[in-house]
Image 1: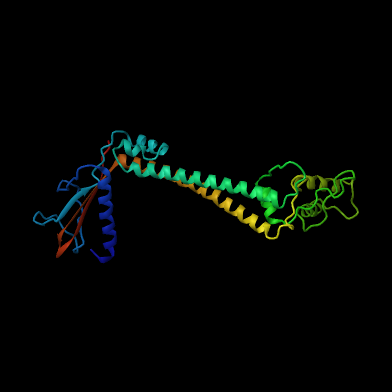
Image 2: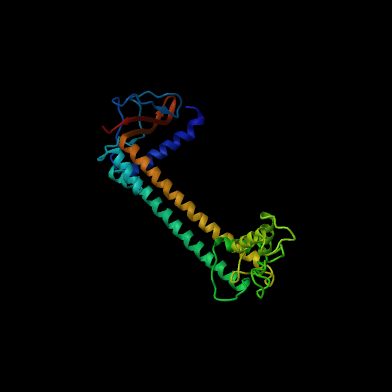
Length: 296
């Protein structure tokens, strides 16, 4: 065998030893009754079965599976609960899938708890450092706090509470002023337009829908560096919730892989034999493998 295949062969040998330990079954030695197994020797070339070849170590791994349930039932069980189908087939590899399931959900819960804690932290920080406390605290939605991290000031909602109707914030460098400027452009409000004009009234309705009103106004200018600190807390919270979603994706993938593995294991058996001893031209590692159907 070429040197390029040496790492791959050793990997197969290690994997076969691992799965043999997991199976808990007696080793099965391969003989001439197998379907013409190919024997690969690290000593070089193809090593045909030779009865006079001394073996320092020999063992067969991953014997044909003899399932007690139909393959599709094994796959369905593992789809619902990873590892359950493997257990029904007598395969201890199910412990690996069950363990990954537990780890996935623990990771999800940890990320969710930390993300929720950070969410409460940035809401408290915003209330204490920037929000204009004009009444009882009412928390906004996620978009509200994101906007607070991007704009230094909200500006007023109504510039003149003594006048009838809403008098929008005019400064476009404030969030509410930006909303009013946008409304003027959307509805093509001219400089001569005013209350009573259809375009102006449409712009006012747009402003009242998207600008933040009393109770949700803010101003970061009194807390130097406060908005940067606040944005960092939001970023950390977002990262934790994103990691929680990734954990859910991992759990789903574990269900699918476990189901596929259980289904295939219920239909197909794999024999792998490996022994250390003299091969062609010297000592080496010899492997033999057979893939066959064990369910009818």
